[in-house]
Length: 427
Image (cartoon, rainbow, N blue to C red):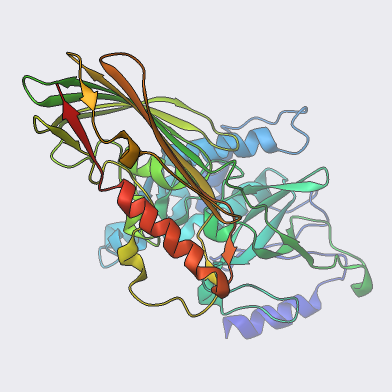
């Protein structure tokens, strides 16, 4: 009945009017974005108390400063999933989504409405970006996907491009313009919001279609620089590590390092810290620097102690490679799509407390290079007590044709070999 009444109500309005309806059946009917009627109910009053925290800045013509501040604020708020709301309790029913804003809380079910209402209050023109998870398929101009496979976020026009805001999707804390890999390079439909209504039907703005940006292997970079101080007498390695995460490595992994909610829709192989080396103890992790702009660099200072044997250093699972041969038990029978292209780099400085010789240097040096993948590992002697072991791996193209699948298997086998090496020692 509500939907039917809403339809007839829409038909009675003048063509110069534009309807804003809320989840709570209130209709706000503006003549334009700058001349609107407001409903001064409890919800609206709480909403305006919140928006007054963000004073208008005449220099902020694109509202980017305001949206960045809003994102920082919401990233600080407590996220309440719908499963944890316990709606059977009357006390939960009595608190609206705008009241929770004042309590520094975000309810998952109402996030879209909150963003929409806040931007409406602040007279911000924006596009609602409708996109599909790239792992499930893509939109076409001819039709939309099923709603269950779609997501909507905010796109702000900036010159000839857009800036994206993904509001606490599944509770994750994304920075402005940051998209997880499955929304990068995807076909996207843009619906204009908070815009002056057209006086004639043919003047209505056309739906825009765009493709979101996609990061490259020169931008998705993980670099692990580690100094391993090795006491031969006690057979203990003390590791001091600086972990640098850029691009998608930061988007996925910094939540794990920060002990926040992680993206449970991606494979578990991503979630390995530099301190998760086998048998390690006394792990320590501290965020040292962070950038909120692309490529969203996050750096961590870490340390751990690792026991070793007298005659070798077992490097098994010291690397956090994204692929293992175990992932490909079945033959690849179609084109293979990587989650994202990347560069994964490890620099291990081995510093012994007495002169030592590594007897299997040739086994530690290897290389692989083709148009899709690269691997380079080399160990070099720095002094009588120091060696540098450097490993670089690259996945350079997003799509691997089925007929090139042997290149992937060669790459994966080489990764497994590196991740099971032993450094043999002689005194």
